[in-house]
Length: 361
Image (cartoon, rainbow, N blue to C red; front, side, top):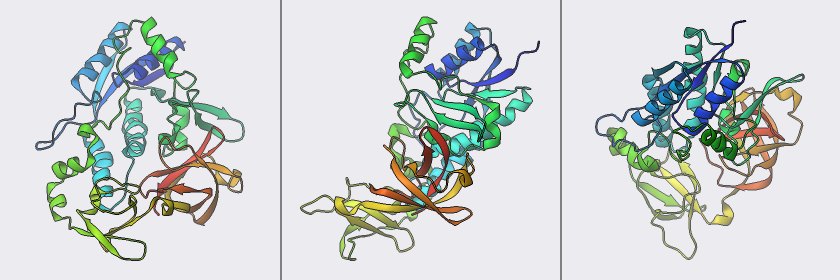
């Protein structure tokens, strides 16, 4: 009987290495693939991130060789630049704060990579995300929070096309990080002690401001200084260009006063940034666009749901109101600090991922 073939995304880290082991144990025929996503262009300092490095590619190959699994490196740099890096740059210059991982999942893993599955005649792709896919009699295929709530990554998966879930495997969904490390040590994997990545693979030192200056010097040079204003319109300082600031920021504003000031609103059109004291930084609702639903909203739109407005947010009870087919208003049951345009608002019913979208205001 022919085994189902699985394209396993291999980053060269411990999670994807253990994913390969779990795929083998489940009786599939795996093919390891490493996506080459980024190479710092001339004039942009190279990141020391392990992800995308030659070492990570070599480690992925070594893991595959250990289990006699074929390994390929796929060049997705053009797609990554267009859909992730250029998107990030554009959003910051608009005064938004993007989460590039959302686009990377949508366009690279469940775009370029899943397209390659056809070339390899693979039935599935598998990634090392801490999330669970289930088949539900009422909803079809669903994404749920992973067993390890501290590592759960379902938040960054809201933009995936629901039609692709039946071609997706998450081998680590029912494991904790501790259990994954234990498996890696038991199998004597060279990746067992590699630390988790804490930064974006293309941002040196996670410094997006310097990256914008290096990657888009002409655009950076054209940015104009403008005014910091209070809620009443009073000018209290000068900003150095809106791409340098994010909602909720209080450091490096250069505004003196008895209490710290926080960035409350960025007005790109008028080139002004509104600042407020902390107690005025809480919002009762937000507008969300570019929505993708993984569960038909007709099945839950009148329910109380939980909304997460950033990665590692604790979540807030919410209700939704449709403004049009592609725009909804989220009403929070308790006001939320620093709701940030460009970030993702992601909706859950308990552990079930309902969908998400981009906060517009």
